[in-house]
Length: 323
Ligand code: NAP
Figure 1 (cartoon, rainbow, N blue to C red):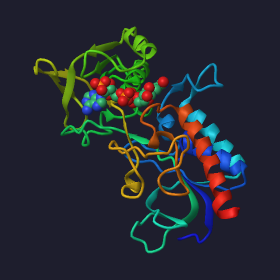
Figure 2: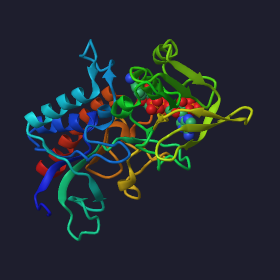
Figure 3: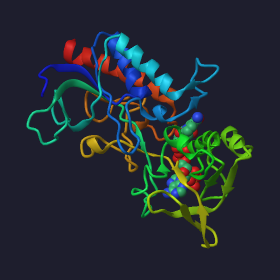
Figure 4: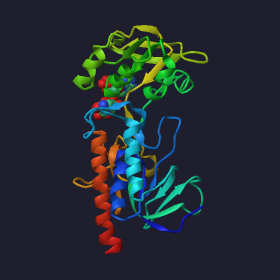
């Protein structure tokens, strides 16, 4: 059903960026509508990537740390308290060719859009990358996972692997030692990209081994994972590692498919914003959080850019709609 109201602010996404934008625009009496997304098979869900993480130790204000989902519930409750309208749906199409902007939910071929808005704040975040192995998708949810928090419990006393060499891989490997018998980090180079503190913690854990210079070429198993096939990236030598779980932690790609051909993007798909602002190349359309940040990618920087987008949208409405 379409809604003929022209919303002042429509926010796409509900991670730290989107919900901070919601808190600020709600407090500015702009009654933001937030399409917070819905759970998907690739691990996306309302609340964004912190819903898939364990303890967050570096978000200021929580000296003892806080669990990611708990932090996001706090963001959500705070946005609701000031009157943000949070809808658990995902946009299927946007039309930014004329104002008011049009947003569809459900059938993207429907003649009428579901929502109209004077301004859009895009905070659709980023999604876990996969390795594109022959059997990876078939075994996703049957031993292959992108979320240690969600699935770690299933691997009690088992031998498992984590693929990647960044902070995510270190964090997942360390977390998984709570359950697993052994965790082997498989990394394609001979040094990690991860921050020193996180690699030191992982390397000091007696349950964690590292296979350096190693690239996984496939996951093998009939119903569930039984082993991974590995190629040495220096010698080309092939080997196998028997594991029942494979956690892929090799980074993310921005969720910008909806905006292809409408908003300027970098070659890697991240939205381009006009610093020092959150403006995109379309008037009244702002972007914040990981969808436009391939440099910092932190919850706190996402939240900060959500605040900037809210202020940019408020000023733009004042100048162009309400002024
Ligand atoms: P990342 O830093 O981009 O690291 C990705 C890792 O995966 C790299 O080691 C990369 O190898 C490897 N990789 C990429 N493609 C691969 C492929 N096809 N096959 C095998 N390996 C592949 O991603 P991330 O670890 O998800 O971290 C993203 C951002 O979030 C970072 O800014 C990070 O600091 C932040 N983060 C912070 C925390 C925290 O502070 N608590 C936790 C998690 C993430 P190469 O090194 O060879 O390129």
